[in-house]
Image (cartoon, rainbow, N blue to C red; front, side, top):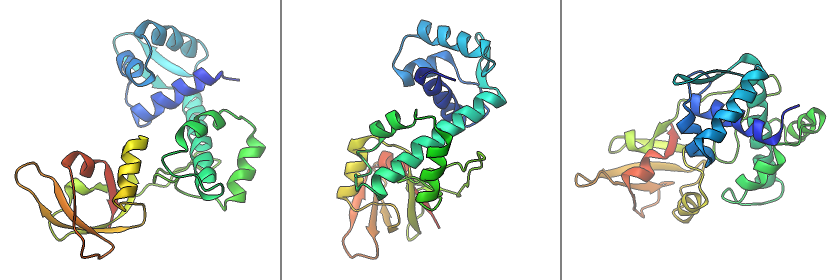
Length: 218
């Protein structure tokens, strides 16, 4: 059985590595907001438990066992986010911290029943794929709005940034999952993007940075 802290480390390594690339101690320290020395100590513990492969100055990767645990934590987190939004009517910018606590409920039966109760959702409220009970993940070919050309359209299907201020900003502009956007203009000065939502005649402008963090599918 892993501690909450160990699970958080494994989940963070998984997300930073995208499953396989080595992750540095400094990367983990920055994301987890802790000292590099504390990270090193935890990595040694995880290595002793055969959950990671850790080589100083090279970085850390997950073992197969570590990856399985990390994917399971991700699954629990995203299922709870979906439940909080779809069944308890929380907004998508309110659920991350609550899911951070709920993800550590380790009962496999509870999580599997939660999944079944919600009819096995494939994506969480932010468009991130939810692993199934076997760790399999569906993948969409996402493209950020910043890569669209003028007159190109797409359906908002995910976001790269999950901070409450960013999600609130998107909600205010009606840039929500499932809505269709069309690029009207890309301004030469700063690459900000002018677009319409759901075929509305109203035009809105978003920064290049925001456009990088909103993902669409064709």
